[in-house]
Image (tube, rainbow, N blue to C red; front, side, top):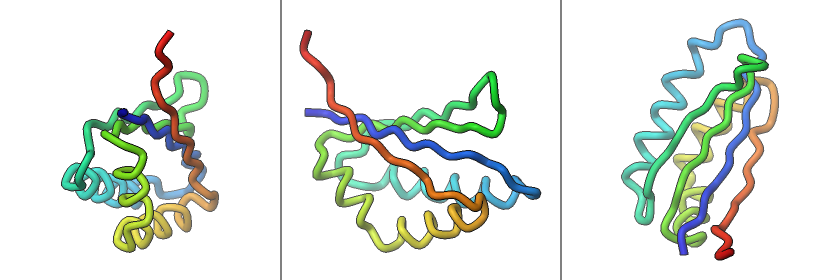
Length: 97
């Protein structure tokens, strides 16, 4: 069953251009992972520093494998260092209603 991962970041920093190549690299690497389906990156209309990324994966195991990937962790640590905050993750599954 597919899962959706919600990733929330606040870009409260002096030089946001430094972070864009890192985010692009994360996205490019995720696309090459087993089970990757898609990614949408969204910016809040109320607070332009708020970003939300929603990615879809075939299984939670696929997501967990990517989440634990040392290369992803290394890039993510750089992102968190630049934004000065921890990135938050939450995994959702579809509800059959």
